[in-house]
Image 1 (cartoon, each protein chain N blue to C red):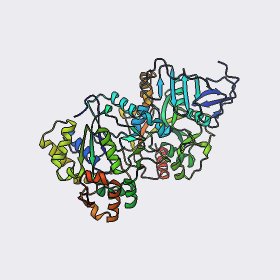
Image 2: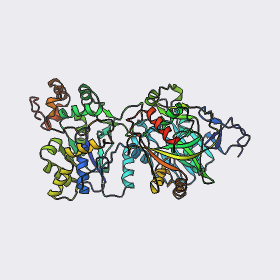
Image 3: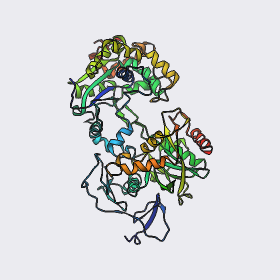
Amino acid sequence: MLNTNAKFIWLASYPKSGNTWVRIFLSALLTGKEPDINNLETNLIISNRQLIDSTLGFSSSDIPDDDYLPYRTQMYEAYARAHKQEYILCKVHDACTLKGKVLFTPAITRGTVYILRNPFDMVASTANHHNVSIEQALDYICSSDHALANRRTKLNSQVSQHMGTWSQHLQSWENVHHQNMLLVKYEDLVNNSQQAFSRIAAYINIPHTDAEVAQAIANAAFQKLQNQEQKSALRMAPHVKQFFRSGKVGGWRNEITTDQATRIIDCNYDALLKYGYIDNAGNILV
Amino acid sequence: MSTANFKYKYRVGGITIASDIHYPELILDNSLEGAEVVLAFGDVPETLNNNRADFPIVEANEENYLLKIPRAGRYLVNRGNRITIQPENGAALEDVRKQSLTAVLAMLGYQRNYIMMHGGVVMIDGRGVLITGISAMGKSALLAALSQKGCPVISDDISYIKVINKKVIAFPSFPRIMLWKDSLRKLKLDAEERQKLRADMEKYFYPVNDSVFHEPVMVNTVCALASSIGCGLFKTLSGLEKTTHLRDNLFHPWMLGPMGKSGYYASQVLNMASLVDVVLLGNDQTKSIEELAELFIEKMRHA
């Protein structure tokens, strides 16, 4: 049930979980057109430095991150107040909590769509995105300290985003928003597209028919996105050779070793079991 | 006011500032006239009466700008003629002092009716070019690369602009470029610990040649770094697009409303837009900074 007193609808996920794909779908559904991957209706990301600066009132890059952390929730509230639309769709890769503080409180949250993807398939995609080895990508997914844009020696267009391990990220959102959160599995978006994408549209309360959802799914098809990317690189990831890769479910079997898969299980066992990605014996089910 | 008894007199953006605080980053002013502004340590209120801003660490009204930097101090800029700094207990004075070199000086400029642009000015063959763009677009790195190639830089991050006799004039700020450690490394520059903006940040006030920091410069072109076009490509803007880009690249444009200056700067920007060329330069950082600097020089020489 949406909290209609608030505006933010978080499109939350660990990176490489299909967040961009969902936002492209929503853009297609809202506009009825094939979206331009570099000019989406749903392009807002909460870690955008301009958004942070304009709500802090000061250049965030001139003070240490920790010094404006206590104000983050207040800043998002101010951003929502300054924007007149009924709701604001916003991408989030941060964990919901940082250093014991809830960043995205229920009070400022209209709703949360959490996109969950099995971490086995995310590894190669993460390695490709960051131009690192499979082992390094595994380190990210299994590290409690994992963060994006966290390099302290350069300025990034996004502020630092703490995520933790794959399962810590998931738990942080579940713990805070379990009463008002739609969890959508990436694998369902691939295998049962019509039903899974319709659930998202219904949760957000976007008026839609089955035909409109089907058309939006067609307009957001991977092949079309890959074709667009070949013509003009995705601006949000200019250093990535191919952002839209295969997107397949179960591709990990050709990308990582059994030992590497076991390492993922070791650090995320409970959540993997809960969401049916492994069985009790630790067999991988995707 | 009498400013004769202060130890130092600086000139920043054409404004003379008297202070007992030593700022090695600033240019000293040796003229005999009194200073226009006093900068001193003193008591600063925790909050402003009639605050019109809705920010967690900034307050403002028509006459005052109050900045509250955690673990550093409070900074009050008043009526364009006084800057007061109250350090937080236990704060390192070097940090406190250097934090006054960005937004505080920019707000002083706004209070004195300068057009404060977010970016820096470089001279190409004697002509001023203002390089703007949102944070993290690579403005300072490009300025530093241009400086390395012998192009004088007269401001970085905040640029003091006035329209005088139908000419757009930039006033030198101070001979430092703010660079992050990675940019210094890419440019093969070494910085010293004491040049850090804050002891706990890897952001430095890197010194540049100060020989051109005495005379204002005419600006013919504004170049906005953007990710919306291919890296290294240029696009000339016209009409409303020019005005929009200049307005968007004012320094902290969100402060104009609380300061009661939105209308004034709308007309100033419109005026400025009619007098300069505005071009976009694509920079998604897929080209090296040296390559971008060379493309920039080539383009501006033929502008």
